[in-house]
Each structure stands twice: as structure tokens, then as C-alpha cells.
Amino acid sequence: MRWAIFFFLMASLLGLLLRYFFVGGAVLLEYKNVLHAHSHIALLGWGFLLISGTLVFSLVREEARLKTYKKILIALVIANLGMLLSFPFQGYGLYSITFSTIHLIIGYVFTYQIFQDLRGIQKGTARYLIRYALIWMLVSSIGLWAIGPIAGTLGRLHPLYFLSVQWFLHFQLNGWFMFALLGILALMLERKGWTIPFNGIKLWLLQSSLWLSLALAISWSYNYPFLLYINALGVILQAIAYAYILHPFIAAAFPTLSIPSGWVNKVLYFGILSVIAKALIQLALIFPEVASISYTIRMFVIGFIHLLLLGSATFSLGANALKNNILPNGPWSKWGWLTLIVGFLFSELLLFGQGTLIWAKLGFIPHYHLLLFLSSILFPIGLLMILTDSLLNKHLPMNERKMKNNVITQISINNQTMKKTIIMSLGALVFLMASCGGGGESSQGTYTPPAAQKEKAADPKGIGEIRTVDLGDGIDEVMANKGKAIVDMKCTACHQLNDKRVVGPGFEGITNKRRPEWIMNMITNVDVMLDEDPVAQALFEECLVRMPNQNISIGDSRDILEFLRKNDFERTGSKDAAVK
Figure 1 (cartoon, rainbow, N blue to C red):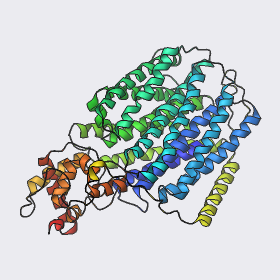
Figure 2: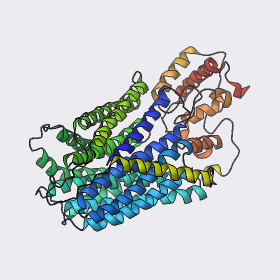
Figure 3: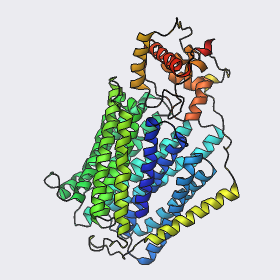
């Protein structure tokens, strides 16, 4: 569990660096590489170790079995350290893919072992949910195995490539994480003598909702309207299923529905509220218009993932671990967890608040990126407090006195073991890098959408109805000011005004590289441009983030163009070089 906190700290520092890109500009590392490192360490370092550790300490009794899991832990730590040291520098490359694959295989070994120990608990809701959590973890890995062959044969622009990624994320977050979370909460109640009635119909609702809500992930790759209606049915069934599961837990843990006493109970309360908030937000996706903007506005995507992984899983499972002494609950830990909650609340309010303002066309929160960066600082601060508390307590009592019918041999992972593992991991990575050399880009398949197969050459004016643009003399300040307001509202979440690429390429120099018709067509006809224009496709393949269709009118796109002309002239001293 100390290693889980350690990787959570590393993920938070990488997340803080991502925020810094929008505040202080680019650093030595590429944004895309840091993003990959952050997501992998958050999911496979923190998330996986938190859930797997909680399952081990909840299910395993024999000391010999615990030694088996310790070997699995060492392998997982080496894999995560390898990803931590390789992803920021090379993105997807030889070493990062190797360590990711090692983690995947060790995950299979863990699943097999925990299935054996799962037989030791009585049949019931908890056993059912934990068993299916493991199954959905295995199902999610299908997407990972598919990425390589699809990228090698069809290319990274093919819809199946993005669908493979979404498949993994959907079954990882909504399947493995959420089923495990609900199962562990149910196990907590069952061991206190509570019965959670959950018949076949209710179980069918939960399983069906998982598969039906996959339709939203599919719609990211295939824009078919009927998929949004399938997703609507899925989130309705999910809300009903969650209500059946959480109601007895809330009734047992918080009978008066008031804020409970004790800081650990408050953390648990906050985690359960996050689960409820997740279900309610997804319930809003029954409206196709809301479902469409849920994945086109980047703040909503990030905010929802954080709500699921940080709000729901972290605080619910973290509180469970605290209540059973799996994690330390001393003074440092108390203030660390409360700091995490404050940081989480502020960042979520900023993300969902700014996303709502963009949806309502009301502009940007003043100093939005700076505020988001400052709120993110609270995460590593809180985690350092928790990790300090853990390291100060060298021998953590397990939950043998806290959990009914669960006698666990007292274990401690001392600091020396942690240091040895880090040294061995670093040594293994250095040896691999020295013996294998650098990992170059693997050969990529190519995918050309059907509409673009007829004509490979790029039209410098792009594809769309805009074929002629009258630039006039000088800069029209009125138009430029209108364009700036639109850019601030809809574009600066992904683009900077300088030449640095963050999520998307920087705006500086755009009018000197692209014709005005191309720029306006890219703004107003984004989906067709990404599917058919070779230049737009090249940018898409470089950024691997599909530019959303913001439904910008031709008149507004002309105002944006004027602002971009002004931005180029002020920054480079020239504009419109592409038409000269």
C-alpha cells in the first residue's frame, strides 16, 4: 500500500507538470509523453495497487499465500518504475511498451491467484461483484492487445485504433474499478453481519448497463446517432443498479444521512457521494445533445475520469483501508487525506465549471489555468503527508482486530525492502537501455478514409465551402477582438498562442504556413478535414487528439482568422505569408 501511495504521488507530480504546460509554457519533456506517463502510473500504479492490495488484505489469510503476493508486488513495482522512467522521455516506445506488457502479464497472474482466494468467502453480492471486477479487468486488456496489430496494419488514424483505447478505458474504469469498489464495500458490510439483497434481475441490470454504456465510447470512433440512445438506456440501468447496491450500504453506515463523525468516516462519506455524483452525471447523458458535448469538451472528459478514479475509487477504497489499518490513520495521514479532498474539490469545480461556461458560450474563468495549477499542487502535498505517516510507522497492524472472521498475519513492508526494490528496478532498466539501445519508432500502418482515397494530394485551401477569403488591408481590430473572445472561449483549452504544442499545435505562425481558406475550413468543417485533408490528418496523427466540432459559423471563423493574423504579426512581425 505504501507503493500505491508512492505511485499516486508520482502521478500527481506528472499531472502537475501537465498543468504547468498551460501556465509556464513547454519544458524539456513533450506534453504527450508526460500525459501518457501520468495516465499509466495513475491507472496501473495507484489504481491497480490500491484495489489489488485491498483485495489481498481482505481475502488472504495464510502467510504462504501472502509471500506469493509479495512476489507479484515486486514484479508490479518494477513494471511501474519502468513505465515511470520511460514514458516521459519516449512516449510509446520500446521500453515503455515492454514494461506495460510486463504489467499486463503480471496482472493476469494476480487475477488467477486472487480467484483462488476468492473461494474462501461465502457466496453473496460481494463475491459476485469482486469476481466480475476481475473478469472486466481481463476483458479490458483485449483493447491493449489490439492496439499494436491495428496500429501496424491500419495505422493510428483508423477508428478501430481509438476504439481499442476506449474499450480498455471503459472496462477498466467502469468495469474493473467500479465493480471492485462496490464489491469491497459490500464485503465490508457482509462481514459486519449485514445482508445486501441483490437478485438476478438486479445483477442483470448492472451487467447490461456496462455493455450498453460502451456505446458512448464507440461513438467517439463511429459517429452514429443511434449509439447515443443505446448509451442512454445503459446509464438509466446503471443508475437503478447503483441505487440497489448503495442504498443498504448508506442505510447501514449513515442511518441518519447526516455527515458522520470521525475524519475517516467523512472520507468514506465523500467517496460514496462521488459514486452517486458519477451515476447522476452519467444519467444526464440520456439526452443526445449532452452526450455529444460530454466528449467534445475536454474539461468534461478529464473531470469525469478524475471523479471516477480520484473521487469514487480513491476516497471510498482509501477510507476502507484506513478503517482496517491497511493504511496509517495518524495525524499526518488525516491532514493528508483532507488536503486531497480540498484539492480534488477545487480542481473538479474548475474543470466542470469551465466546461459548462464553454458549453454556454460564456468565456473563460479568469486565470483558469493558473487556478487549476494551484489546486493541483495540493495533491502532492497531501500525498507527501500520507507517505510520511506510512514511512514513520514501520509496522502497520493489519485488520485482524478490525475485520470480523478475517485473521491476517501481521505484515510490514519496511523501508529497506522499498529501497532495495527501487535500486534493483533502476539497475534493471539501465541494463536494458544499455544493452538494447534506443527504441525507434515502429513501422506504422497507413489508413486513408474512403473519401480521401480518390485524391492523395493536399488542396492548400483545404476541404469545405470556403474557397476565397478577402483579407483586406491591415488588421481589422473589431473583427480581431471578436475572434479573440471566441478563441479564449473555445480554443485555449488545447492551443496556446505561441508556437508550443500542448494538446494541439500552437497558433503562432499559422497564417504564415496555411492559407486563410484552409484555416477557416479547418474551423468550420473539422470532421471532413480530419477525414479527408492530408495536412489535417498529419496533424491529427502527431497530436492523437481529435479536434472537436465546435459548430463555429463561417462569420465567427473569419473573426478567428483575423485574430490569428494579428497574433502572428505581433509575435513574428509577419502575416499572410502563405498567400504571398
